[in-house]
Length: 304
Image (tube, rainbow, N blue to C red; front, side, top):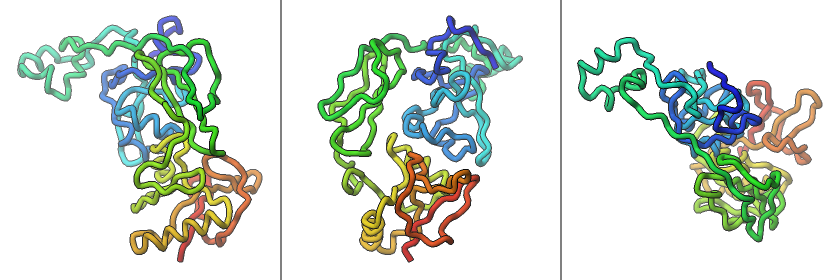
């Protein structure tokens, strides 16, 4: 692991490079990064940033600034995954990791363009390092139906994000826009209609996915659909009846039981919604439907 002075970095060290949105796809030891969408079941996958990571292919990132600098996963064996830091600011001079690069290149004229091992001969192959992004953005333009809920700044670095909330519905989707070298990512409306294939329900959109997932994977899958992509929150009897009616509409393609948002706080004994941690006020399930998953009790909504 290499950690460099703040003055040498191309990202905001105060957030450990959470703002980095460059294109580096190899680690500081030139190991290729795995796509974020292929590592969602890793034990330490940052599921709260699944939507952001799902759009990042296999590029180095530091979701939520949780580690010291941008990183990526390099190896996966079931749910056990290895990760390594990336030299996204090109501070280190290119080197060869393999010791026999000259022989490898001599034996294969296409080695530097086709071989999986070519990254181990980064210097000898003359491979180029990705140029770090640079620049700033002025404060974003806020749509007429939105409100900036993140901190307003006079200037934003490339990679910084701003959060804009719909003002027409309570609890609706937060929109995240990003400062890029060409300006802010586009956002013309803060309040949007439900996407094709989704069911509108009050100020929420929901969708049933007909495949099996464990609770953690189900949460991560929902998060791929945006910052408000969460397991369905059954807030009252009307919510539960709506889901029951949808089950009848779907018929045999609908599983008998589905995960819903909810967890038991072992410290207080209170039920909270899984993602917002807001207290639950409606309870209508049998005690047998609480199922342990790691350190949480999660809920199955039983339709049988």
